Image (cartoon, rainbow, N blue to C red; front, side, top):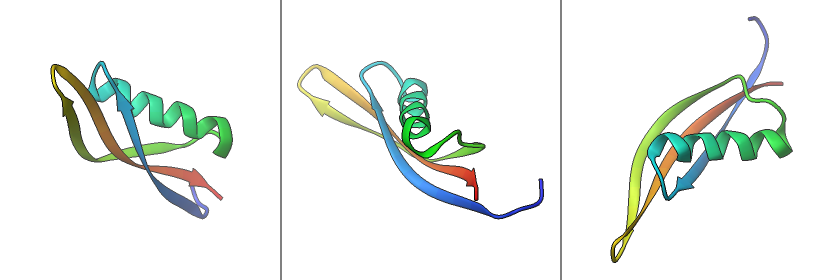
Length: 65
């Protein structure tokens, strides 16, 4: 796939799982930026608030320019 590509960094969040957090980030980006071609997980982290856990995933998402 020859061409020029752009990478953006996103952080997705979910109350369910890291995988769901990644899906949320990619789906939301597709609504405004167009269909991404690939993603790379850069970091997994989370937020703890009492008994609640929020899963967070930092992604690099690639688009063809």
